[in-house]
Amino acid sequence: MAKPSAPSELSRRERQVMNILHRRGPSTVSEIMDELPDPPTYSAVRSILRILAEKDVVRYREDGPRYVYIPAESAEQSQESALAHLVETYFAGSTEQAITALLRLGDADIAEQDIERLRAQIRTARDGGR
Image (spheres, rainbow, N blue to C red):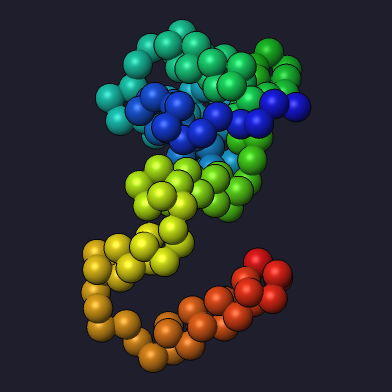
């Protein structure tokens, strides 16, 4: 199986459809259309899903006369892939720079319990337990 497309290789509409599929789980074209902002035609959504399948980011199964679409990767895998791409592209692969930028963006007043959870996650990652 080919490696799924990087997030930057997806169009805005393709990302919207992927967000819907990750949130909803298995969905039909009609169900996806119901959640798309300013939805295009049924045929256009089918075309988007066909393209996503060609990019190996969506799979589908037949359910009677309709197709049910599901993401090829879990939401967590997609998030990690998108974040890895972001860190590599905008922070020259530096996790430290990316975390620093996130801390500057967010509220600097992080609760002590949140800091302790982050420390535990860092220890786990260092030990190879990701």
